[in-house]
Image 1: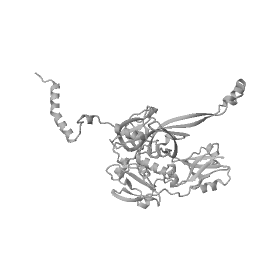
Image 2: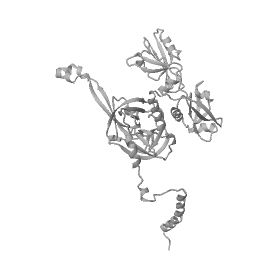
Image 3: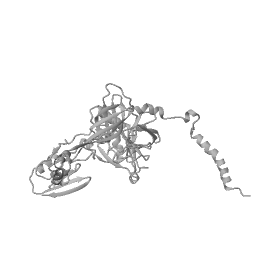
Length: 472
């Protein structure tokens, strides 16, 4: 009589299972041992933290344009004076909803900049339904963060302390608290999926905590909590094809949030340290050519003469791998690390030079205003009439979030119904030549434009491409 295959399979399992149980035991995986452990809950943590998470309602007045039909004789013939009742501009109130976090008991609230952008009125609503009017003390588009202040009349509000987000690890449990879709305060749980994830288009500092805790519209500006009850990030964006949560949410790390809060409380101006160098990713091919075991760090390709990196001893070809012991794998990560540091401090750069690891001390200074920007609005009978230009400097480049080592004359603004707008000039363009003469400063641009011409030729650099045009 043949033994059924299923019986043989069961026999093999009985032989293997004891070994698997031993493996589980050696890894010290603990199962709930009693009813109390089975009933473990986030409830105490949520109860303590949720009062510090608020709803933010904003209102914006939108002025509607007058219809062109009001001046049409055809419609005036039929409606006469009755048409005048509908004439004139009308205001429309646009409302939006987001979330925020109280980070100081005296009424300091952090949220996303896109939550309050353009708002004429901001209302902060606590979890107990109390309402406060809020004022913006700092709004930063580069980080997509905003700091608000509410008048508490001396009352202390519940608040959350910030945690060092650099200590966060992939796999750590987190909670997201906010007001998705306006349904009311909601808590979702998940884990940290990544700690240095890029999310293009969200902010200039593409360095986010990624989590699978459900984040939906209305969660923006809400809290991402660690299991110690401290704030590890501000929920800011989701990756979604449907508009709802698909398990890919992004939060701005608490260390960046802390820098913005500090800047808001000391005058509202954000000053980040300046490296004075720029570089590129180390690809697999580059790593092989450089004799590295794997791609790592940022390869320095350009240095600002006399800048902080130059003074620290960095040279072109060095690979920056760490700042103060924290990994730097991409130019975005390098920029983020610098943005979270404070001017006046000294940090340690770990570099690789010709295959040898070295440490250099970098003094953190603010970007210099050199050359002076000399902001000028151009007027006159020439094609650049209506353009506002300036000399680019490290300080201005930092403000505009552009390539930090660029030099020359940049267009800051172009007025409507001007020669410059008709020419197609845009903010961010670099003026390189006028009438075949190279210009590198605002003073040189003014000097060339002061000479009357019947024909003008202009060259601009736009996103690395040189565009030329000739006008009469």
